[in-house]
Image (cartoon, helix red, strand yellow):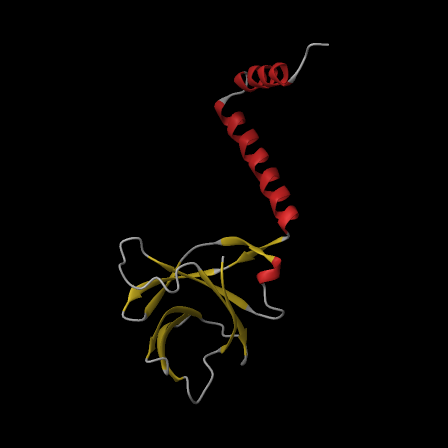
Length: 160
């Protein structure tokens, strides 16, 4: 009938031009969400909520407040974990990027802490100093990693 893809594209462009800017954005957001859903289904991704920690130098990591969610390949997930940390570094930071983009999966070995880990320092891979925040304010705790477990154990570290 002489109507090919060019005809359909022009028809779609005309229809799109009639929409208000606000409705165009709603349509584009919907299409992007559908594309993301299809990609996730094709590759078997699992959406994860993560706590983001930013490297501040001197082995210090600080919590970045966010509602971060990542799509992670299901095959990269460990069998059992309680929480996921995403380790980041600031753009201007010239430190080692050994942890940039790493996901750290933690399985709690004690009762799940009610407080939020606000920042932590790991010194000589044996001592952790942890600043936590709860309803009462901030508390600095120190853990000897050679003698006691630090809230839980790392069950997997992976790139994303």
